[in-house]
Amino acid sequence: MKTLLKRWWLRAAVLILLGSGIVFGCEWWVAKRAEGRCFDDVNAVPESPVALVLGTSAHVAGGWSNYFFKYRMEAAAALFKAGKVKALVVSGDNGTYSYDEPTDMKLALMKLGVPAEKIVCDYAGFRTLDSVVRAKAVFGQQRVIFVSQRFHNARAIYLARAFGIEAYGLDAKDVPVALSVKTFLREKLACVKAVLDVNVLGTKPRFLGEKVSVPME
Image (cartoon, rainbow, N blue to C red; front, side, top):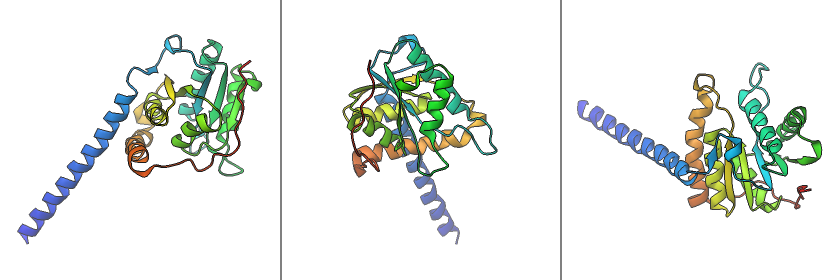
């Protein structure tokens, strides 16, 4: 019995170490591919025709404001006002009638002073890979600036480079880990999924559809 328990614990320890190695290895590789391409100063970001604002819910459980959303919108508005981009594509989930991330983002950006005609909604950004691929395939962009928190920008840039898009990131203000433990833990697994999507699974967006023009004047 003791021998069986010892073998079980040994196998469990090996699996835990292997799993941890894969998670941290993928996270390191994603960060490495984005190295030197993420900026927290709007003035340091290279100019680009378009910024892609990555979606999240405007509110969290209980109806409280989502600070990830708030800080992303503030960063995107600052980027536009600094003249670094000519238009913003807001990409998020609109999977049900009552849940519409792109429209919420557009309305928030308008309140921050971005003209409505300079904001284009991508209603099929169901996941980051979808948003990235659609930026090129649907919205015709070869070069973009992602707007999100640093951990998210790094993953988006990793995906963008894999799909032949020149990409940079403007890092929105971070939310304290104590307020977002679930998000940061989920991001570690998302890095593994991104590496698998690119190198093993060949994952495609859920929808592509007709091309959409982005106003540049």
